[in-house]
Length: 203
Ligand SMILES: [Zn+2]
Image (cartoon, rainbow, N blue to C red):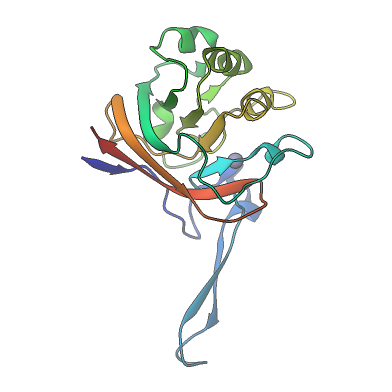
């Protein structure tokens, strides 16, 4: 089976905290009525839909995107189903996570299309536990990896330890298990996030 776990980008799509300025704007540079071709234009935050965060997002002078696909974006990924409201140290320790794993958390977030202000997130203690194990990357089915934590410790713990953060996954149809991951961020240099098409393939 192949699962496309990416969000669809369109003008009315769900965006973080429903902020109007985060909605992508679709327009046209030319149409067949005004020119010899049709050419569309999209203006949007790089954190729209399914995307990878880079350190600069939460760390002053942090790293930005380069030209290579981050380690772990193509390779095995473990999808875990989480029951609770927060992914904390206890939740992480209950799972079979090994060093160098890439892990995706499937939560109740995947069953809602609107923005849930109470979305399930990874807490600072959860991030510390993931860092202690030595994972490569983590993905969540929410437009943010954390909420309601002053100073964004989850982002900072993960990003300062070279653990990639993939946000905006849609995992409703994906059973728990191990898959081959194809996370292909757009090849844009020097920015704090990259929209990505993310595919899971059954092994
Ligand atoms: Zn982001």
